[in-house]
Image 1 (cartoon, rainbow, N blue to C red):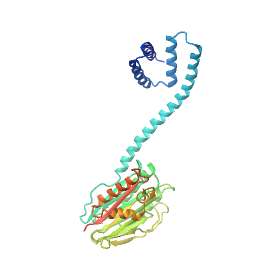
Image 2: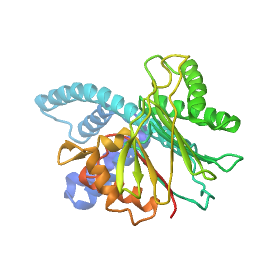
Image 3: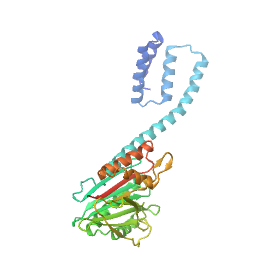
Image 4: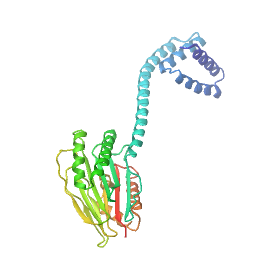
Amino acid sequence: MKVSMYQLYKDMLTSYLEDKSEHALYHAQQFSKQMMEQDMSPEETVSLHLSVFQDLAHDLPEEVTDSFDLLLEVMIGYGLAYREHQSLRDRQQELESELNIAAQMQRTLLPDKQISLDSVDFGVISVPAGKMSGDYYHYDLDDHGNLAVAVADVIGKGVPAAMSMSMIKYAMDTLTDKQMQPAKVLESLNRVVERNIDEDMFITMMYGVYHPTEHHFYISSAGHEPGFIYNAEKDSFDALESKGLVLGVSPRISYEEKSFPLDPGDFVVFLSDGVTESRVEGEFIERDQIIQMIRERLHLPAQNIVEEVYQQLEKAQEFQLRDDFTLMILRRKV
């Protein structure tokens, strides 16, 4: 034990035994900080106290000395557990820092630019249940002014899901530069995914393209949660779905493609299963309830609709998301 620490502790203990003042106790608290800086273990602290106490009181009863032997053994076990706890805490803080950086990088993969298309009202919200998200969304204009939109869900969480998301992002950037038909994009993307992810992982996706010159919407799905199509003239919602196997299961898959007109006021809704698996009063939400939430906000811009629906469902779940939440609306302006 360092002499300086011994002398400091001796002076402090002597002062306390003489007057038992609050000032001496304050010095004890300050001394504990020095102990941490010196990386003193609990058993070293007990040994220090015994050494100083024996120096101050020469005729200690034998049972007092023996009791310190027992305390020292207890502190050895405690010290080992404490140091292991400290090591685990330091590692946890390191991992937490790394996850924060990874989460920031993941957010850069998602588009945030404005859509410069006069005929479209667009809104999207995506909120992870934890630090890392397994949801991905995409929107972009091609050279012909067509708007491609997509929502995907990586079956898996954490860092593996984030890495798969980055693969999807860069693959889609490449594929959509070549052609924008949804079925062909999914077929090409499926081959990329099948070659690059683990066997126990797969990805669902709904991919659509809006052609503003003809006001038609084209859609294909790779096993993704069905969305909705709203018909303004009929004031009705229908399921928006298309048949197709999830991405990454087999290298040679063909995908069904559907198309329909978008008249003024019509819109499509893409979502992830974090929306449909939300719980209201302990029960999974019904699709009709989601429709009703959207219907109550038809007068709002698309971005306000998705944000308010999210806020309502978040509040219903006591602000604890059970899964990643993504909701997107593309509406043809009136």
